Image 1 (cartoon, rainbow, N blue to C red):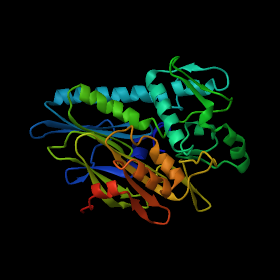
Image 2: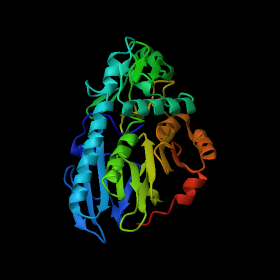
Image 3: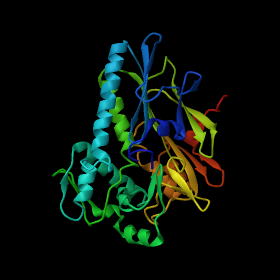
Image 4: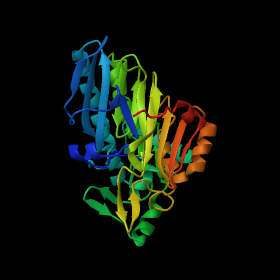
Length: 356
């Protein structure tokens, strides 16, 4: 799934987090200061501004160009405010969020939800159907698993067996006309960590666009959305090897509107008896997915890839190949547990060698 919605994140934690997709600005990696410490400089012909803040359990970076610094500062502040508003609606760690209210009312009654939450839930249902259940937002019922810093918990076989029957997308009932969501059984719970981050980042980018910023990139824990150009050139995003983070597998360029979405077992995990226990859980087994270490997807829109990274982590390389055949415009890169790296024809055409 992703780094999102893992609870509050400290600046030190987010700066150490490994992400598979990494924006490359100028000749180097994303620089940035501490969260909340922007840097601005005069560009040609526009002013440029970068900022980094902690959101959704990770660090969200924005780089933008515009006609003047005041416009950019206002646009970035409003973009972050909108993303914070949406995070507050969709985080299961906030007791007053829409998601928490749905979870509290599981098996009791439908809950009225804002349109933004309904849209994400509908998207989740579509991905669940398309992936034959490999992606499932009711994975939140597996509550014993804990991946937070200093709070690693490995469930017992008995605990997984008790909670697994409560996982099932068919138990999430949506009434778009009434604007309600309902979990059919007591104990069911939503976790939107694998499907909400990209729409939230997209909303932030939409605010920038609405306020007149035509050239911008938003990076949230390795999910990168871009629009326009950076100093007249396409945006460049490096794809890191999940097992050798100092090495780039290659670089993709994004010109105009585009998204690079990444999922992997390198984001939140702990080791137990030499095995990596990570947060991308298989809804069928209640245990971490196996066989694929990381997935990166490149497309022109969030809708084309949202939720698919986690689904492919569960389904494996064959599903990635099937996706590439079905959606040839979506670039797919999958890093396997055996050390292999598979790229779809579309990704291979986009991927450039990393130049040190």
